[in-house]
Image 1 (cartoon, rainbow, N blue to C red):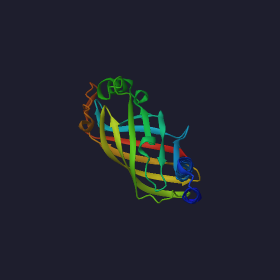
Image 2: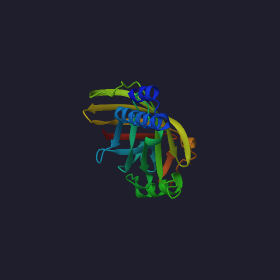
Image 3: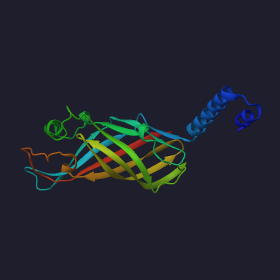
Length: 212
């Protein structure tokens, strides 16, 4: 403000206006940067998994097949109003590292269902937080929803995650859950010799640990 008044009174001309504009840009950047909240994926405490209900041959009861990986990377960046900065917020899962208790199932899922040679990752770009106080709490457990675009098997679709998170100072931990059908992402239901049937529903769970 002082720079602008100085230009108006003293007639510094182009040089003065340039200096004022530079000062304004610097000030805006500083205010914007300090008002942002960055949550990075912690080095430990993260696991993403899929859960599919199946009927195995030779077993009387249905079974949940669980494939899990700790290979999760990324960050979440929120502006001063609690909105995601889209080009700086994304979570990436390395699908090539997913494992269940059956190597035959893993090989089939990697090659045929997920086709990881062509689509090695799943990416979630968050768009909105629903039901979470802003500014972010410093402590306590909260339930809320995260809305974002999930890219899997070359297809991008909106997804809604139900989240339970615990805030503890600069650390946020908890679990996020969503589900969808195989066809939603152009994937075929697995068909293996030792699996009689597979339910057409995939549950995704993410045990997360973020640090500010």
